[in-house]
Image 1 (cartoon, rainbow, N blue to C red):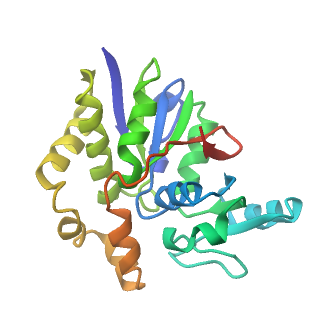
Image 2: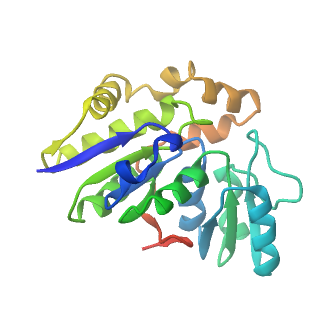
Length: 239
């Protein structure tokens, strides 16, 4: 019986928590939702970096790339895209390289690579089944990494972890610590009323206040995309 643990924020990513494990990173609102959408719409690859400065410098070296991301929920000056998955349409991204930097999600992805995760996938409500299918095909222990919001717990990511756990446990028995059981039980209680539950959550309210109502609706749609993107330490592609 393998072990699966939930990691509640990017700040909790360490070699002890992820080294040698097969990992799914979730930043539902909105980085991983943006990543899976862009790749589903034909983006060639996405290169995640931690800072705006790194993104700008990398674009200078990759002349055909586009810049995407956010700080404070909004697009940095001079960037081609923000962090709204709805901006990454087929016409805008097909066959393009996107250099992406976000406050939480890209930090979590890079952090898992630095902590020597065995494999790193990108997940959200949008592609949960596909991401779990790829994850459970691997042999070894698993970790579900919630990006959180500025090193603090984020309810949207935690509920997504609960959904992924429910899908994993429909296929096999696992060992879990209390945090995993809490994620599972919370999703089982409230997974069918996500917008109503998350309307009380701080990050959801921030994005709502910025006018991203359509993003919120889209990011909470379940199992719309049949892709399971993989981060190899340099770039994210469809496996």
